[in-house]
Length: 199
Length: 84
Ligand SMILES: [Zn+2]
Image (cartoon, rainbow over all chains, first blue to last red; front, side, top):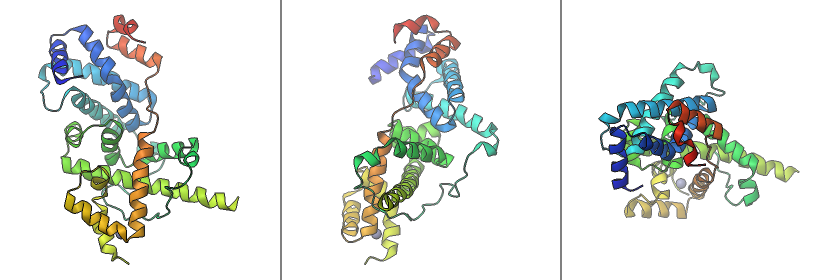
């Protein structure tokens, strides 16, 4: 969608045009859902957040300001809605509490070179599941940045706007998230390679 | 053998390097270091691979029934038939 199309869409939304609302939902609900699901790890709750996001957005569209585009604005609303739910969740829902809160740049420990493992090992269903699991376990502060930058393809500036943090912060958190996931994958692949040698 | 503080010093900039967002000077510094630091080479290669694997993950999608519920809750049910 071009900038001009998007401005036209926002104007129709502001005029209360229902077909514009439908178009907006069609365009942006997939991304909003992906963000909510990655943050909450619960399909039903993610679904609720999507609903809340659009309800709130259509209500507040009159005050929409053109800073970083419609989708960034929607991600921001969704992020805040998901955050409120996360705060309400009792802590023991978290399966594992990583000792790393994401604030420190941990020195890489796993130095096993798994790059040259065969594709079938790197892209196995089990490896994917391990990666999904690792993303779910990412420290909360890192996860939102990671999802928006890496999975939703937002720019550093857009992610900063959506999350209400500085661009510098986005950069360092993205980097920490990647290092954190690398560490987890390295652990998994090195165990897998060791088991392979024994077999 | 490289002093460990070089590794630590460059560690924070590796994402910029991988994303092609590092300055020419920083790139050169990192590449000089990588040329004779096996550990950092492994970190860079596996970090790059991690990013690739992440981007290859299938994206979760709203189910058809969830999409229907969404449209209904927003009072947009009349637009549901417009797209699959
Ligand atoms: Zn090094």
